[in-house]
Each structure stands twice: as structure tokens, then as C-alpha cells.
Amino acid sequence: MSLPITYNANMQEPSEAKVSHRGQTNLPAELRHRWGIAEGGSIGIIDLGDAALVMPGGLAAARAELAHGIAEHYEAGVAALNDPDLADQ
Image (cartoon, rainbow, N blue to C red; front, side, top):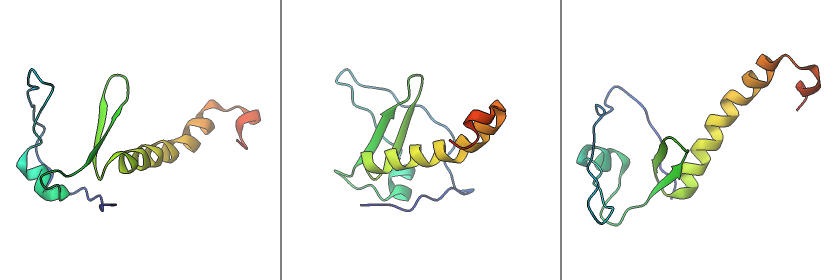
């Protein structure tokens, strides 16, 4: 299931959540409603080392969003290296 990702002025203010002794936490209701996540709905979580990417739609959606973000900045990063051997990579 692929959900459309929309970013707009209706985004929720940053918040914190506590993790229970069993490792469980809650997504705020506003996020669940906007993301279309019902009971048993799927989110994808990718550990980025010092942060985590949390996306509605499961792991495939999270991986696709991460790949999109990397691709957006890859060319600019290679150009900034100013290395002619990498120019066509």
C-alpha cells in the first residue's frame, strides 16, 4: 500500500513520546489520522545511526523515501567534490 506523502502547514508541532518498559510507544492521533493509519496499520522504521526515519506505509515506503532523499542530493554532493573522475558517476 503506497500512501501519498504530503507536507503542508497542517504539520503537527514536534512532540515527544515515552517508550514503555516493553518498548512500545504511541503515534499522536493527529499523525495517525493524516497518515491514514488505523489499528494494525503499518509504518516503516529505518535506523539511520543517530536518528530514525519513521514513515507510513511500511518498510518499502520508508526505503523509497530514503532513496529519494539520497538521490536528490547525490549529484550536488559529487559536484561539490570537484573531482573530474567522479563527474560521470
